[in-house]
Image (cartoon, rainbow, N blue to C red):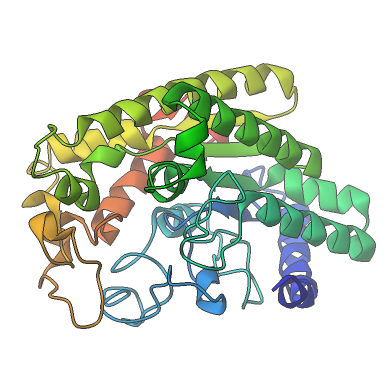
Length: 359
């Protein structure tokens, strides 16, 4: 897998140097973003897992049915992801990293902050490995085009990180998990925050200066968890939402500290929790008919059986907040991107991406 990634670095380098030349040639005074680098899990994976031995894949219909090509891409939704919409707003072409000439997306479904997270699925690319791939990219760029130009590309690019949910759902809370045995909730959250702290510092040391980090979404409000706990009706499996909020509070504090300690960095907290709670709470105002039931799936909330080729699927995904047992629809992802781009302080702290770019 690493060999395959390294074999494509020269093509990624070609894309980025073109972007750098465009940046150098821009005399209009308008801000330029050479690239949008993506690290994280299935919420931002646009197809990397297609090339891995894993059950965490979505390279089959009905996934992708409402995408531009109406074909599955490896995105875990019916259409575009939030980072696709964000990429459109900053005029950046996004493609998966493992098979692309313009790839800047390292994300991998099932992955987490911890290397062990997602092992139940098979192969995945943990955050630490994603950072290693990014470091390889920078080294290759530096050899070809020089350190100064490479640093310029990285300093003007946006780095979006969305990770952490699998560390809970597909690691800590898995029956028989060693982490559940060895850590209480607080100490496990501290372990994750410590690990992410190291990873974000490494991201900065690689050259990232514009860093956006997504919070956990309300994990207890996704169809899979509503279905799992529906027999005991824990008010949206509230303990999971409480856990999400406890993690997010410590994540917020971490990012505030990093804004001070990483002197040249702009670090933004993207509150997926607040955004999705707002959308779910006011779903009819946003044009949705269903806020807790998946478009594709079976069982309670269509969250007991995952979205597969022979599983029932709704006719109009735009009526649903959720596409499958875990992931939002493309319509919801567009709202998430809009709020990251120009949202208020409760959605993007301390500024939104539009303000970050001086637009």
